[in-house]
Structure formats: structure tokens, C-alpha cells
Image 1 (spheres, rainbow over the protein chains, first blue to last red):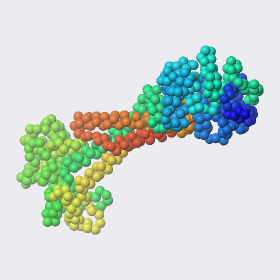
Image 2: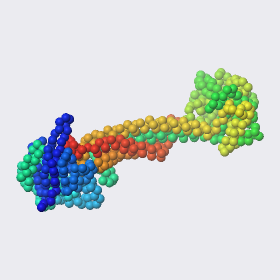
Image 3: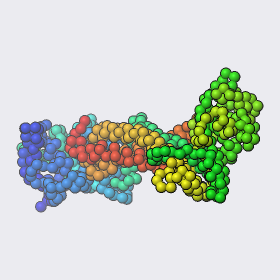
Image 4: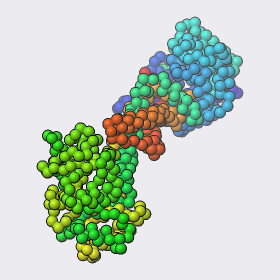
Length: 226
Length: 408
């Protein structure tokens, strides 16, 4: 029996827009196993982002149960959630979201600082950058790097704390096809070699077909898993 | 995240926007500099006034009729009898010299030039009691007193106004209320910036004044200056004078109808006045510091809005509320601390310049930058930075990560 990293039961997220209630998620149940690479697809408005926010512990569901790495997230305080995000989740965003004033190394090191790691931060950050193939660019600032390289820095940052899941939200969306493919290959390689559990949110069928499972969402519900 | 890292990061983000950071700091710089300079000027004024009063002599006492603190009816004037009694070394062993004066303002003229001066009738003892010094000539003598001589010792302001010079004046004749007086001496400037009238004075013999200029009944005196034997005996001299006058004025029971002031009393009063002045000036300056603080708050709010995405990202990778709070508080505290340090330097410079200007205009007075003022300004500036930083920092810390990441 494979180990479950994510166990979500009947997740609902309801936003109140004045008088109207918007059911962004309307009862999503899904399991994701350790070492898997899963794509979440669906048209805009289907609840992809909401699901990612909840699975990434950026937001809490209105109802339902969510276990991340066997820890129940639903009742946590903001600071506890921050701790969970720090230790268990690595984020890769479409727009990279790097700190423009800091070098690649400081960007990668940042989660370790919030984790309170006192020693060896720079060494770990350097290793993470080497893993993503940027060992020779550690002191460059994001402005001095190409889009693909910036996304590699972001991936290194996401990996630095050895998270239980890597959340990638349209990781290739802002890249040309060549660097997009390189980034996808990198993520696939990390999944294969390091056994990192990866959840990719994407529109791109080329990305989706490389994953082991595709979860399709529609109107806040899981439409199909294949 | 430790403090050192927080400070480093804050410096990094402050230096990313140098003009804005500089302008924000400027607000605090001006505030702190104003506080430092104002307090320094106030302290300097206090020192100068205290020094000027003490320069007159620390064993000096003043006696004048009336009571400053309470209403007294039937005030008896200070008469020649009183002066004689005080001068009696048996009754008042702590008193060395007694110098009664009468004074009034008169027009003093010399060939078309005119000045309104304080004309005092004085005794020869006045010179040593008041510690007056002459630049030329001599003071009023016993002969002058006996002969009701028409002689005068003039202050430097009078000399300057009437003659345009302060030397070679002995032998010239000035007119006071039309009556001719021969100049026998010119006084040294008392200076000290205690107001112009200190040097705008004319001394004439007391007897001459009583006979011809200031008509008073039965030898009433305006002020009696008394010199104690030594500074240590000022208090006992004061007691002796009070005792003698109470007996002579028959006010053993009830309120004194005269006032004895020692030099220390005057110093204390002056210090109270300049102290209030200093607080007043400092308070006005503190308002500009407050305005600087609002500038910090304003710029930090802008900064939080601009960096919403950054805050979102930091939260996504594990920053707690406290981390974000510390990050922004460190920035605002650093802004005000930097402003404080530059402000202290600038305030010092301003105080120094004020001193130089005062010196150049002849009112020698040295603003004193005290350690207290520096500490006060630094602590106040940092407190302002923290206080006005709390609101923006709190706003940043309470941003929802999802909202913040979505912010464009």
C-alpha cells in the first residue's frame, strides 16, 4: 500500500460576495500518494486555484477534512499554517515570484531563514541551486537571469526544505516553449530521482500527459481522474 | 529570523529606493536637528544668564521695598535710617558694604545727540558692591558726595550713542535733564546679553541726585545693594538685614514690607524662566519630529502596498506574522534611527552656527548640546519610528497570503 501524502475529503470552499455565495469548491475528495506526479486541469473558474491554495495550506477550506502528510490542517492558526507551508510545501509560481533585490542564493536561502535554521543555510542553498543546474549563477539577481533560469531558482527555493509536496502553478506559463520544456524536464527529473511528490496545475495538455494522473475539475467538482 | 538578518534585509530594501528613503529620513533629520538645536540654544541661554548674574558677584544681596509674593499695605520705604542700621557692623556682622541707590530714567544729551538712560544716584561703595569696572577715569568719590558734585560715570552704550566712541571722554560735559555733568569715568561693558539697559546707564553721586535730579521725600531709596563678607555668609547677611528691617519697620508679626533677594534667588528665578523657555522651544521642535514620524508612516504604507506580492510570497514560503511585522518595523525604526543620527549632527552644527552668529553680533553666548538632549532625541526619534511603523507593519503582517499573491 502506497503512503498517502494528501488526503482530502469533501473539501468545500464558499466565498461570500455580498449576498451571493460562490461555491468555488463543492466537495472535492482526492488522495495523492508519495512520489506521485499529478496534474490538476480544468477551465478557468473550475476551482483549480482554490484547490491549490487549500492543498498548499495558503487558505483553509470552509468545510471538509484535509490531511497533509498525516497532519490535519483544518484547525490550524495562521502561524501554524505558515510553519506547515515552510516545512511541507514548496511553491513554484507562474510568475516566479523571486525577490528582485536579492541574489539567487539569498532567494533560495529564505525559507531556511524562516524555518530558523542557524547553520549551513548558504551551503544548502548552493546545493539546491546546483541541483537545478544553476551552480554558476548563485550571485546573480533575478533581473540578470533568463525566465527559465528564474524559474529554476524558484524550484530550488521550493526544494530547499525537502517538502512533502511541490506545488507548481502553471510553471511553464510564462516561458517560451524551449525553456518551458526544460523546466518540465527538471520537474520530472526531480520527481523521478528524488521521489518528490509533485502537483502541477496547468492548462497545457503537453504538461499533463507527462504526469501519472490527471485530475480534471469542473465547477468545483472532480470531473474525472485518469 | 534573527535581528541581524532583519536589519541587513531592511537596509537592502531601503537602499533599493534611495531618493524616497532619503526624503523620509530628511523629515526625521529636521525634527531631531530642531530639537537638539533648540534645547542647545535654551541651555546656552540659561548658562549665559546664570553666568552673567554670577559675574556680578555671588556675595551680593538686594533689598527693595515691598513684598513680591504678598500684598502688603502701608509699605515703609527704605530710609537713610535703615541704611545706617544695616551698615552697623555690631548689628550686622556678616555685611561688608552697603550701597543704596535711587534711580530714574532721564534724557541725556550731548551737542544734539540724545539717549534715554537709567540715571542712578550711587555712593562710592557701589563700585565694589556691584563689581563695576571702568575703562577709563575714576568712580564717584567721597569728595563728590560731600560737594554734591555735578559729575557722572557713563555706561558704554551712552558713550557710543552720544560720542560715537568709548575712550577719551573724561572731562567732556553731558547734560541730564538740561543740567550739565562732567564725565569722570566710563564703565566697562557688562555684556552678557542681559538686555541693552545693562550698559545704558549713568551714575551720579547719590547726594547730587537727591538734591537736584531725583526728588524724593525723606531719603527714600529704590534699592539697597549689600555685599556680604563672604559668599558663605550671604544667608546670615540676609537674615540680619531682615531682622533689622523688621524691627525698624515694626513688622515683627505679620508680613515683611521689604524683599531681600540673594544672588542665588535671582539665579534660581532666571533658571526657572529659561527652563520654561527651553521646554517651549523643544516642544515646538518636537512637533516637527512628529510630522517626520507621519512621513515615515506614509512611506511605509506605500511600501507595504507596493510589496504586497512580496509579502504574499514570504508568507507562502513560511513567514509568520511576526516575521513580517519585524521586517517592516525594522525598516521604519532604521529610517528614524538614521534620521536621528544625522539629525543630531545637523542640530549640533546649527547650535554651533547660532553660537558663531551670536558671537559675531556681540552677544557672546554658547549653545550647549547636552548628552540629555542627544539621548532624548535619539530615543524619541526611534520611538516615533516604531510608533508610526506599527500600523503599516501590522497591515503587512495581517495580509492574507492568497490575496497578497494575487495582487497586481
